[in-house]
Image (cartoon, rainbow, N blue to C red; front, top):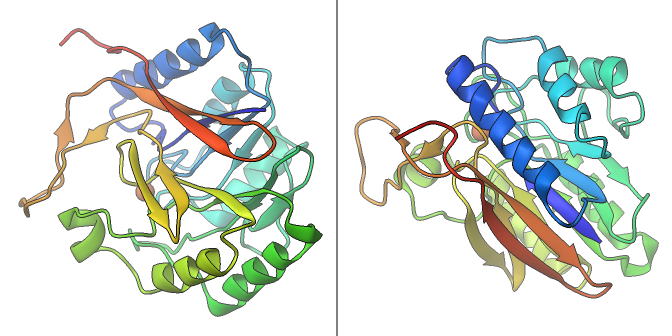
Length: 258
Ligand SMILES: [Fe+2]
């Protein structure tokens, strides 16, 4: 089973430049030898202040593949849920009022999506009720291999903006749950850090996909402002063989002349 993983589309940040970069990523996905069974979109489909999900869903639907979305800190849970109902009615619907928390059981891998949106908070928010729901779902289904999708990279990224400036305590509680269910969870899929970054939670791989709009500077040392960095656009292919997942970083070339 092939899962393609894109993130942080931030439609329509940077106008035509950002849209061109997204198109470039989607074109690269179309040209792959293998076809995705499902596409994960790990949040920030739109950029804050832009509220129309129509254009971005139009672009995603051109891939003619089922996709699974979660909210990022630039999205809005209620607006994203409403847009999914309107533009992608086949998409799983949330189990919680006003939160895009859901389970998708349509594949050999189970997907659990956790909504971490909180208006104006880069580090997001997941409340104790949602965490309890996650724990209960992970205990279901006799340990069916599972991918958990959440926007923020929940382990320390070693980066100033994402750790020191914005990381929230819910991440530690989340990591404890993943750790307790490390035999069930095969992958935690995220975005948010605008780079392809890997880590582990008690041996479970956590992978953040590249942004389809802009790549962030690695601020190992504090910088004044988060900066864009010129790097190739990209995405991930995760291959599940029935037991474990191998993740392939794919760079899709430069969308614009450097
Ligand atoms: Fe984000």
